[in-house]
Each structure stands twice: as C-alpha cells, then as structure tokens.
Image (cartoon, rainbow, N blue to C red):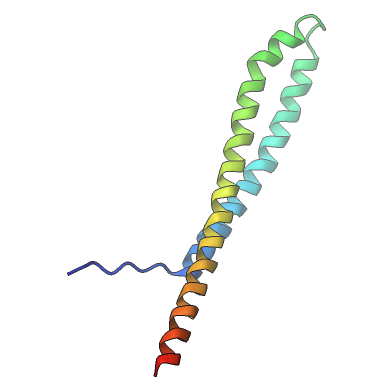
Length: 99
C-alpha cells in the first residue's frame, strides 16, 4: 500500500513566517555589526583599507547571500502552500461536478 503524504498549508505558512521573522532579526543584528566593522576598517590608514576589506568582504557577501537564500526559501514555501490549496480546491470542484 502506498504511503499517504500530507502537507498542511497552514503549517507551511507558519514555518515560512518564522523563517522570515528570524532572518529579519538576524539582518538587523548583522547590519549593526557590519557598520561597526566598517568603522573599524575605516580606522586603518588609507593604503591598508583595501587589504582589510578583501578579508571582510567575502564574509559580508556570504552572510547576505545566506539571509537571501532563507527568505527565498520562505517565499517558495508560501507559494507551495498556495499551490497545494489551489490543487485541493480544483480536485474537490472536479469531484463535486462529477456527482
């Protein structure tokens, strides 16, 4: 017998909202930290700043990309929940029209 797979759109949206909230808080915290880091970098003599930035910028890019990936995932989770609901509605309407 085949296993029954069930996806709860409400739970999917709740999880997506939690991800979004967590990422937004992380972004706020990170931006504050990054501003402090930039102030630190700017305290170096001008000729050293490009070298120091070359150390920190890849980490900055990684954090920002990670945050964006999580937000994109949450968005896709919300869209998947809507698609599931639409498919359920369409299937129910089709079955109701057959009787």
